[in-house]
Length: 165
Image (cartoon, rainbow, N blue to C red; front, side, top):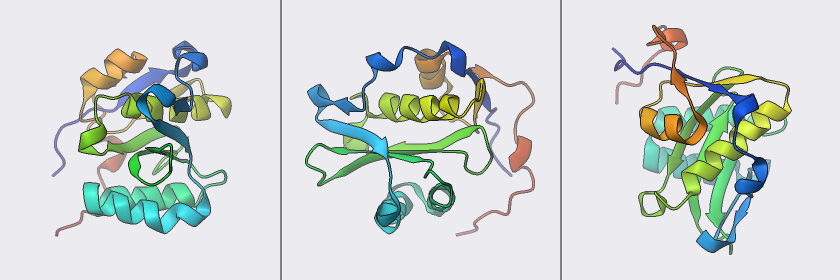
């Protein structure tokens, strides 16, 4: 049985201005950008190792879209992956999963990954996005004004097959 975590709704037309969250956060020495196909195995292995197979599976799904619907954060030198975020995986209009390496948390990495992903969804003509089964409501409420969707747990995830190991 899934833990009770409601989905969240985000008004994409009320996102903070794009200029406030550039792809290159030079003061923090990282870049946020769309992943590309040759990075698929590297990124999905990294996600699987740190966050588990279900999130790696969703990341694989994001690589099946065109354009790829996975954003990555890495050091400016490109030698270290710091975080990832997916959207349109497993459902259109959904954001998540997102994960940030523990040593990079609270440094703007997650905020930039979230916003770059939501800007991408908005650019496709969506007015709203859903953050599926969010574990940290406070972060999403504070960052993008997300609000819980009553009765949305387990929502579309109810019939999902579960990993048992």
